[in-house]
Image 1 (cartoon, helix red, strand yellow):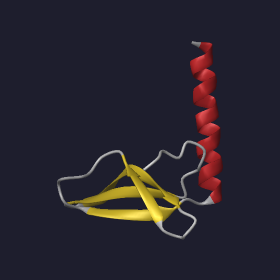
Image 2: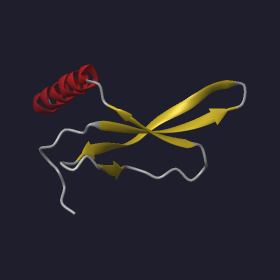
Image 3: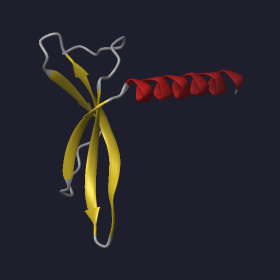
Image 4: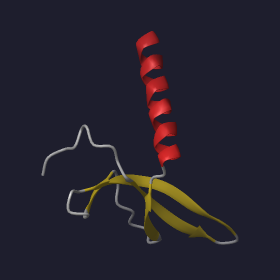
Length: 81
């Protein structure tokens, strides 16, 4: 399997853990890439061991723009250091 350095992720992967008497706690744990055949490759940063639920959600175009802008700011900050 090869890394996909130029492909933008098409899905975000979340771990959702219920908390008694509180809102569920969501943690982003990876991303997914849509392949040419329509299948999705998942790249996980971690695998939750405490139960809960894993949800795969399509990244909306506005989310991609926000992430791209944030990444650009991070690179600018790194350059100034």
